[in-house]
Amino acid sequence: MGERPLELRLESHREADLLRVAGRLDLVSSSTLKDAIRGRLAERRVHIILNLERVDFINSSGLGALISAMKDIRLSDGRLVLCGLTPYVDEIFEITGLKKVFDTYRTEAEALASFGVGDPSPVGAMSRH
Image (cartoon, rainbow, N blue to C red; front, side, top):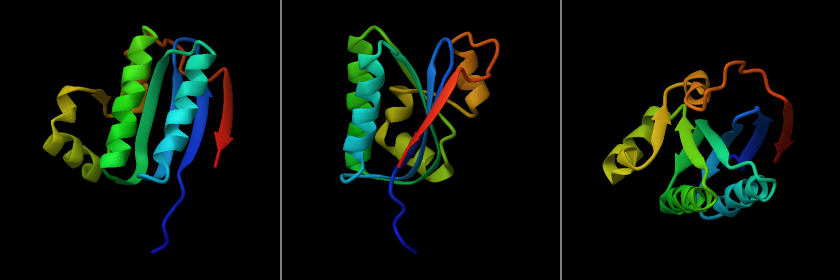
């Protein structure tokens, strides 16, 4: 089985940006995720949802990237939420105690609703491979 590079797909909603993450979240790819989030913050998009349903591997570097992202977002008076945790990723979050640190939701719809998104239709989308 070959390693899948990290893929990011962005959907902008009025109240929050939804970033769909796919592949491995590790030392090699964690900077890609951090750069994408910093780019959103630079555009004053401070409410971010990360959908992790297609993340098939995460290690301490990936977890560190998520913690760093949350810190950057909070410093910008924003909010980071996660959704779609696979059983593997959910178990990692449970073991490390990060389930108590991050707001997590089962679905994108629930995560969007936590920001008060009434109409889940995106206002813009882009991909980055």
